[in-house]
Length: 387
Image (cartoon, rainbow, N blue to C red; front, side):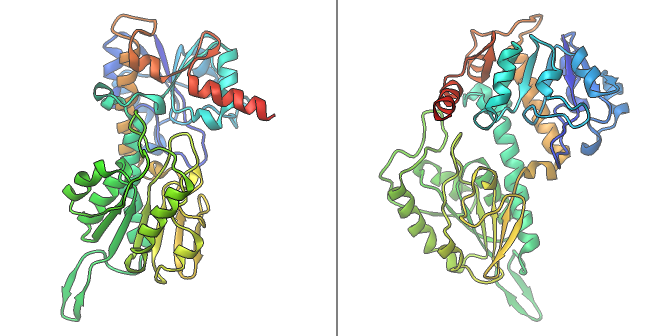
């Protein structure tokens, strides 16, 4: 089959869906890889590297989409600024799309995918199974974001992270508080520890306590009175009363924190507010908050996506798409994820998806002109009812 790799068009995006080193895994199964000219330049991968790896360079997006049966992308389909058309309309009817879809916030794009009978697979809906770990792009990008968030905090903080013994006296280590101990939070903990900070972490899930402690951080306990995790392993939306108790536990730690890394998110929902305006005021001037949940509403009440605000001397960074800040390795990780998912969906010598497989079923959003994912279909119906 012909697999197309378009250049990403989202503002500030530097990643690419497939890197040259991943092409062999596709071509040895007799697939053809087409890459839009310049698609990998922002990630430091030249057109000549793609050609050397066995890909064919296509001059522009219109030609690429027209020639491709399958599209590998990072960001959800959107309006293409050069062509004036939506990327879904550039795809061939009956084609296949694999990439992030952000379906709950892109319902119009899903309708178009269904109308054009495009079979779509969403990277964020890959089931959390042991054998699907190599396809888990959410975890890959969260790893990059957690690492980068700590570097941003260190950059903005007017202090050293590590303990220093100098002729001018002893400088104590910075204290970093990490909210949420998922993949991003754990990577933030590990990175802050590598930089020499004293690290504390909070998460309502008791199951992550050992993971936090194994990284050398102090785990902040609280009494758990609700189910905090879904069967699929995602954090669950909590009641306002439970959130109030969480804020009380967090508030007790803030006066000593130099940097707060916020990573708590609920899949498909608004991020929980863990830091209120009043809580921010309890931080010392010069402290830093890096909010990785900015795009889904923010864990901090005062977060503004894509901006750095200063409130009472505290810097609040509304971090969005941090993975693009490290495009080389972010692209390499994503390329591995999407290639493994593709090879699972289309087993060797097959040109039709294997819908008997639970990973294929779980990640499929549109098929045969319909939205087949129940959660997305319900969201679409709810939106129609509101209108």
